Every structure is written in structure tokens, then in C-alpha cells.
Length: 381
Image (cartoon, rainbow, N blue to C red; front, side, top):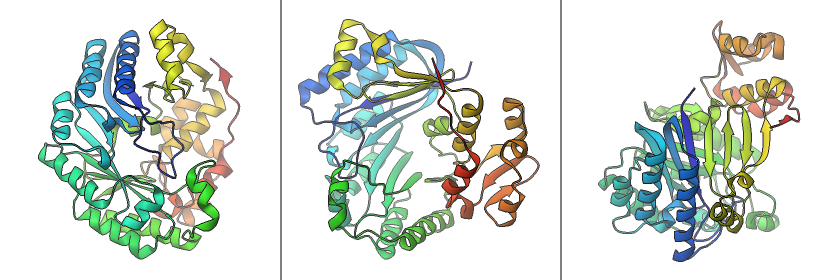
């Protein structure tokens, strides 16, 4: 049986950013304490002897918790799971939550990787996104993490922001490269229905399609020239610094999610916990943990095959053709047709062992994948 990852959702934010549709809410100290207590009880009741090699605190804003809360949660993980020595333990961090001693406390608790949300080094762009911090706060947080001994820091960037230009995005990239974080994620802005940014859409000016494409090409060229591996469509890493936790998502490996809004994938079954903190606390308090597992769906057959392709092709490693044939009993070409035309046009890199998107192909990967894939309804589990 393979190794296991844990995703721990912290559903609290100082305030919601204008583009965010993830589940989160403001909370006072008492609410956060009650939540951590429930999270620890849930973890204790769900223990496993499987080796856990990644733990990820996501949100929301995990660093709204006290460092003692991180210690309590990770102590619970150590007590009830087989936490591997050298496991990757990541915490997402919002610069506005940084306080004296926080970074040292996170290190003592066992967190060894930070993911800091910057998005932009331009103050006007940060304001339009509704970020509760400026670049100075980010810089203070970043340097505090370095002083505390963090040698694995990821920073998030965003392009396609209202009023953003190719030049302003280039400034953000170059400003970040001067700091030399181990990992950089660069996402195109998506406007989700019902978010504040969706409501402001008509009175904002967004970069056009050509400008966004130029931004995507710019970040890829600048980061690879600086020595980063472009290993996934939106992610870049120095040698040996890929996100091990996120890799398990793309490789279809098992992970357990804890907390409201958390998703899980275990032994071929996908399920989630409802996005309702009050209901989560009540279920854990009453011991009714079975009610937390919702939407269970077994992924099998053609749906599993298509999901394998969709996730693996996000990676520049692509698909091992022998592994594909072994898993699904069919060659990739027989399953999805002749790919020579796409390879000749420069969209695919292929040989007898592997098939993967090129940089050119990755930029139009959604269109290519939509031709290949056919998702079914899945089965109940």
C-alpha cells in the first residue's frame, strides 16, 4: 500500500480576496480554538498505520492560527499516523498575519515549507485583488521566514489582473527572482461566479487574450532562464524542490482531507466534507464522523483512464506509455488516436517511452485534452 498525504483545511481569513471562491470565514480566537480542538479529534479518530509523507495546511489562512495550534495538530498527526522522517510539511501563509516569533514557532512545530501568497509586487494590482497586504508586508514575512531557517519557500504569482500590463508583470517576476525562492506558482486569474471581482467585472479593464498569452510566455521564459524547472503547467521549482504534496494530486496518489470543504481521494474513491464549519464541529463533537464523508464516488474504467491522462499531462514529465498500457490494457495511441500530427506541429514531445506537452502545447493543453477526453458519471461508492 502506498504512502498517504494529509490536507488540513483552515477555514478562516482576515477577509476574502476579491477573486476567491474557496470556503472561508472570519473568526475570533475562541472560534479558532474550538476548530483546532475538533480538527485534532477528527485526526485522532482517523488514524492510520500507512506512512504519511506530506502534510499540507491550506485555507483560508492557516497562519491565523497560533503556532501552538500548529504544534497541537502536528503532535496529533505524529501520535495517530506514521509520519515519515523528512515528511514535507507545508503551511500556506498570508503576509498580513505575520507576527514576531511566528516563523520560529512554525519551525519548532515541524513545518518545513511555506507557501506565501504574493500575487503581485504592484500595490495597485494588490488593491484590485482585495489582498489585505502590500509588498512591504510580503517582504517582511519572506525575510522573517529565512531568518527562522526556512529553506523551502514557495511564492504565488498571478497574471491577468485588472490594469496589469506585460511590463508590470515583468517587474513582479524580476522583483521575486531577486529573492530566489525555491518554488514559484504562477496562475492566470480566473473570475469565479459570485465573487466580488465578478461583480466588478464590467467596470474593470482586464488584459486582452494576447497580453495574457504574452504574460504566460514571459513567466515561463524568465523562470526557466533563472534555473527553475517548469514541471507543471503553473509551477516552477529549483532542483529537488517540487511540491511533493501537490505532486500526489497530479499522480493520482491517496490523500485524506480534514476540515470543512476538504476533499479526499482514497483507494480509488473521491469524497469531500461539506463547507460548513458549524456542522463540522457538531459532527466531530457527537462522534458522527461518517456524516462528514459526502459525495463518495468511485473512479474506475474509462473515467479513471481519462483522469489519469488529464492529471499526468499537466506535468512536463507527461505519461509513461508502458505504465499507461499496463494500467488500462490499451496503448495510448489506440485509446486517443494518432498523435504524430500534434508532435509534428510542436505541441507534443514523444518517443517510444513517453508523451508530454511541449511549452507550446501546454499553452493550448485544454483544447487538446478536450479532444481526447470523455468524462463519465462515475459510480457510487
